Amino acid sequence: MDALLTGPDGSIAAALLPLREAILATNNAQAALSNLGRSRAYDVLADIAAGRAPLTHATLDQRGPSRSIDYLRTLLVAAHALPARDEHLVRLEAFARTIAASADPEDRTIIALFARTHLLRRLRRHLNGSKLQPGAAYRARAELAASSRFLAHLRRRGRTLATCR
Image (tube, rainbow, N blue to C red):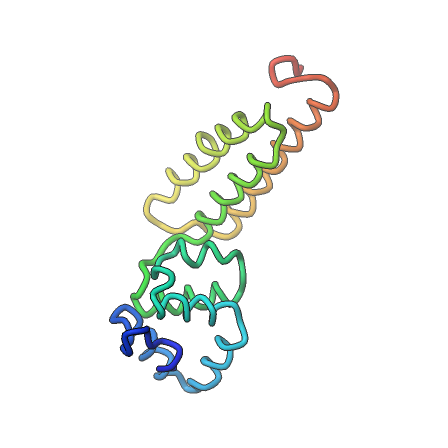
């Protein structure tokens, strides 16, 4: 554990010390370290410890979706090395950007506007400080995907929202 978390200066960064203590305090620290060692999370943690990457949610997000990255994020949040965030809401926002980017260029603005002003604004208003529930996130993704498919359907038939009856 110390070899993984030790930076180039020969010490463990203060932000990573709680993570070290949390892993060592588990019933089976060797299993926890072994699980990290066989995953993409190991490389991310090594980069953070070596100072090649900052200890941020964005650093983990850049590595793409992965159970091991999610596990590392959970450990870092539990150890107070990272602030807690609403993961379902973050993933929904990323999904909205992906759907908009993959849509026909003429539909991108409509989809992005729909996601931002209808779906996400409505969800944030109803959350009122609590976290987004998985079912609500799933429904919002389905609604966004259906909207994108509907616009594509209209386009294939030579129509737009303005000419749709």
